[in-house]
Amino acid sequence: MAFPGGKVDAADSDVGAAALREAYEEVGMRRRDARILGFMPTYFTGTNYLITPVVAEVEPSGPFVPNPGEVHSVFEVPLQRILDTESYGRFRIKRNGREHSTGRSTMMATQSGA
Image 1 (cartoon, rainbow, N blue to C red):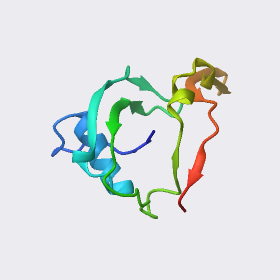
Image 2: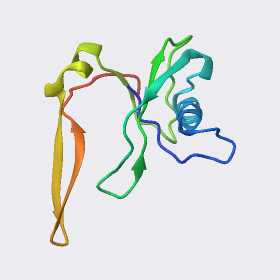
Image 3: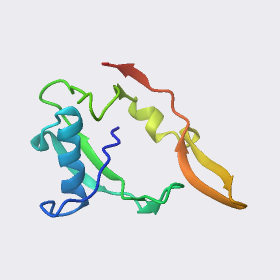
């Protein structure tokens, strides 16, 4: 599971290419180590960012090393926890009299790295 952030650059062919580039910049994941399986539905976050989740199978050829200017830590989540629907919910907040809602994960991550 990764949350690479950033925008699609002009040199990126699509959002998948942007996600792979960002993953390389943030933790050193090589493009050849990932196979994009598909995309989840695009949505707006509660802070008005447009997100396109990219799903990929990753077989790392080396350890992920967090770029300290971009990443606090690297963690892994067991596949069974990702597949468990109880691991997900909705986050709701009221701001300026309006309710905003976004998806959230209730997973507890096993952390490694800095």
